[in-house]
Image 1 (cartoon, rainbow, N blue to C red):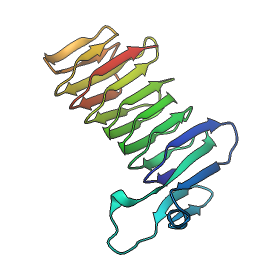
Image 2: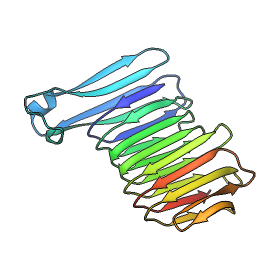
Image 3: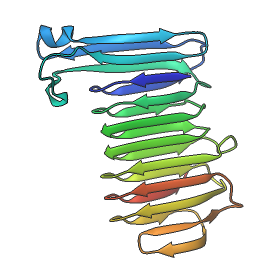
Image 4: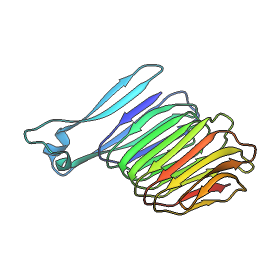
Length: 212
């Protein structure tokens, strides 16, 4: 399992065919003093990798005054589980990871492709896009955004239960769906023979369920 905790800086995670993890971290700061305040804390064991971006405290420290960022690029085994990838000001991109993923940012978009297990994507100010290679090992998917659109692409002929809710946005479903409920800004129903629960929720953003 992999846990990454960042504040400022984009995160890219790519699956490869090796049974090991590669970590690239690029620190940027406005001044040398800013750079010195940023440290990476890495805790690893054969079963778990935890990475945390630490900012040294200073008097009257305000979160918004951090003038440094760390950009991460991780290469991970395809079956890895992304237990919690968490950041504040970051775009998060994940490709080819077939284990369960939990991705969370405040200001930034999240794109995850080649998924094949449970997934949770969460952003306050940013769009969410999830694309599944297979739903065979999936039981639950959650996409939740406040100010951004949420879209999910499923394999052709996939079966799932859809629950979509947008306060101020449009909802579209490419597949044929048997509706259980349908209101102006929410719908629930089954595509195919039903299956994993796919929940999509936005406040100010459209929702789309697509087919490959």
